[in-house]
Every structure is written in C-alpha cells, then in structure tokens.
Image 1: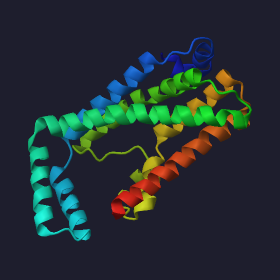
Image 2: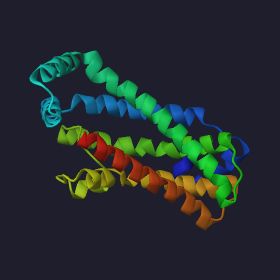
Image 3: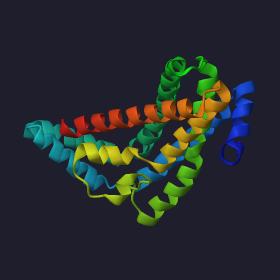
Length: 226
C-alpha cells in the first residue's frame, strides 16, 4: 500500500495486472469519517446558526418561517447523534459518489486521448490515488486540534482566509495541495495502466481537475447566493 507514495510506478504496474480497490476505498472512507468526527467536535455552532439566520433573512423569509427553522436547528445542535452522526454519514456518501463520478468521467474521456475505457481499472486507479487522504488527515487533524476549530484548510484559501467573494473563495478552497497530489497520481497511473503518453495523461488528469474545481466553485457561489 505504501508503494502508492514511495513507488507509484510500481504500484500502478500491479494495478494494471490485477486491479484492486476494496482496501484503498475502505481506508479512504475511514480516514474521511474520522476527520469528519473530529471536525464536528470543533464546529462553531453559534457562528453556523448566525450565518443561517442571516441567509434566511436575506431570502425575505417571514419571522414564523425563521422561528420554525430555528427550532429545527436547535434540535439538530442538541442531539449528539445528529451533530456527529450526520457529518460522518454525509462524508461516507460524498466520498463514494465523488470517486464514482471521477471514475466515470475518466473512463468516458480516455478514448478521446488515445486510451481504451476499462471501468474496473480506472475505478481501481481512482481509489488508490485517493489514498492521499491518509497524509491529508495526518496534516489536517492536528491543525483542527491546534486551532480548536473545524475551519482548517490545506488549500490556497489559507493565504486569503477572510476572502468574501463567493466564487473566488470557492475556487481557492478547491485548489488543495492534496487534491493536486491525487490528480498527479492519477496522471501517472494513466501512463502506466493505459499506456497514455506523458502529455496526454497529464492533460487529461488536470483538465478534469480544473473542470471539477470550476463546477464546485460555481455551485458554491450559487448556494451562497440563494
């Protein structure tokens, strides 16, 4: 398993012969859920509540609607099962769906870059590249503990934490060093597993990353603007 970090070429050569994904996916899920559990403990719920109230008033909701929504929030915040369980379950589904989405997009795109689609191998490649979540949690976890806050980042947003513009804020938050590492590994895997040339492998991988970043940034801006 360590070969994905120490000798990725050798790790991907094995994947080419025998695609494996169960153990890497389980490790990624466990890491994501543990981090979600830790971060949930340090969420500033008062700040979250205030931000939600401001959004509701900006939407011109009536006081009765705001009161009903506030009661729902209070029930959520007062329930340990909801406060800790919901983020963990959400991370579980988001992680799997995100990995499936990437695998489908890469599999569909491969023929356009001279490769041949093979979902089992591309799925295995995406799951193994996702193991960068292990060092990500090792870095982000202590940051949460040191700051005693869930609002930590290893993205470019760290250089502009008070940025207010929704699109730019979302864009910088998606430019994460560990995501860059993951898509770099995917590009290397495309070379080894599917025989793509360097230029095509890196172009495909980072083009898809850029598209994902832009989509998430736009969706984030729309959500804030609602």
